[in-house]
Length: 132
Image 1 (cartoon, rainbow, N blue to C red):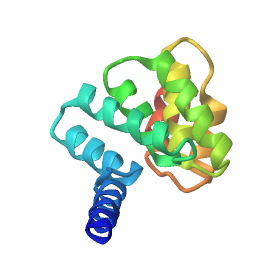
Image 2: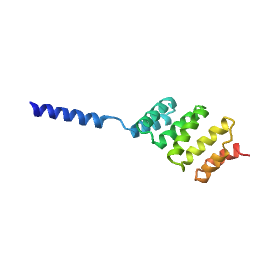
Image 3: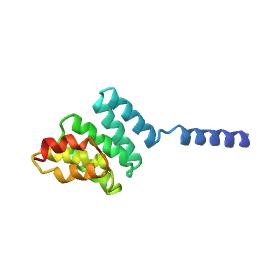
Image 4: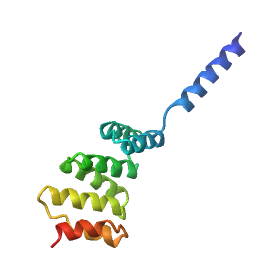
């Protein structure tokens, strides 16, 4: 009886550990929701991914992208700051932060130029628009 109880407990613990969703699972779900235009749902999933892994650079970038898509420019900036703290060469974070700054009447040109320097070619259009 003791062996079977121990076995059941071991199986339960194994299933508990391996059935929990990971930060990658939430990140992937967030991407899927973002593509289907469920921006609020995507933000929730990216936030959960960040809660599970506070150094998940792309979760910050994608959450900032969602906030940018909803016109929440100012709230995109802290996510970009965190992504850049984790990876100072994150070109997309510079791009989003530059656009967010430009849309909140701050100068985002240095971020946009940095994004372009890091190889993010989409920054060129934003530079043409905001950095005259």
